[in-house]
Length: 348
View (tube, rainbow, N blue to C red):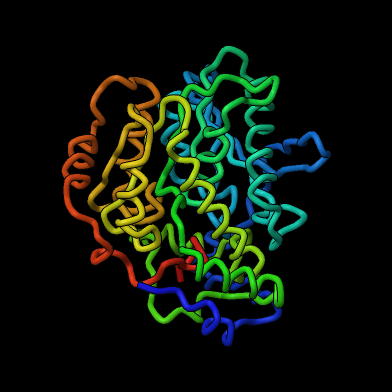
């Protein structure tokens, strides 16, 4: 298993590719959905955000959901209505550098992204006083929340977090050699772009063709990754891996048996290092985009039940499946062929 960023650099571009236009039959997949609201952060940054209110108007819980790398606020289009039907309101902001943010294509840094998540949690808590607040992150978003919830002292005014849900969190280390090469490329050619076509293998993020088609044609999806962002992601992943043993509060970590982006060895190492009491959920048919694949009903059901009935076994049987999977050896022989795919949106 290896990542060869120096070799991949030879196929890099200097400009973003055009947004693909879907054929007429799939025109809806290329729609631009305007944000439902804008969150204003303490530094004045305006964050486009989608929101799905709980059915009935009185939420049992509220979730701040952070998307993955090169994705956007639209990442939650499929699970959010199902969660809303269970009485759970979901807020989905764009992260800095992604979606409809003004710095789209840039990289704000792990520290800034973690601060943003804390600020957004405070804003949402003020909008829903007395309602339990949960954090949910997919891939890169899971790494951001791992770092946030590992902080020993929450900043003043931080609301209590009822629980954290990490979906295939990008919390693992590429290794010093790969990170060094990425840092050098980021320093010497920060705006070089990778599109995924440079990769020597085909990486599948999900198995639902309709969901992958929407991700590909969504105008908010980034189709080229700048070197500075790729290097920054690697650093964020390393920080999240280091912070994982200090994760505070109730947490649910979900992993799929067909994940081709987070290696099984990395997830097994993460699970071993998590604090006691963290729930593990293994979905044998799940791909990296767990809530957008064919196994999504199991994942969505587990998350909803963990929020509303945290002491009960997961309805999918994911507790037992996780225990069985954890007991198996994961020495790297079952890992995908790449250490890091540059896009969470390899969906074409």
